[in-house]
Length: 186
Image (cartoon, rainbow, N blue to C red; front, top):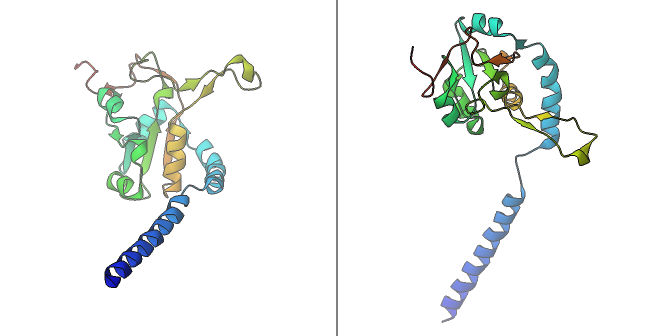
């Protein structure tokens, strides 16, 4: 009986010990806001020099070791994306997933998002927020472009040859080609 009681006390003590260690682990986080702010500040000038026009994008996309990266949801990518773009959902960014489609850090990566396109609210809805009048000190329209965190994260993962489409383009512009399940075959 004493052996059984001793064993139960030992198991209880070990389980409490693991529970306490679990609490310590759960209280920790890999999210470091200050480090992220530093990264954002570092990226700002780099990004400013890497904004490219549609014509520059088309020219650069024809060079070897270059991809156009679409980080929107798979559903939106499958429905409509720039012809030839490769998909990786932004939420799936890790060093491992990025290295599968971007195997070397010196690749040229062209990014775009919904906010680069006009005239298609279904497949390229503008990401924006209009604050209520109470927040009059804020701008009348705040854009939430996916290309900005995409750029920051790619840079944070070590990629430096990142280019971002700067133009606002109508989806009816004949100088750009789309593909996907919603695009009529020619």
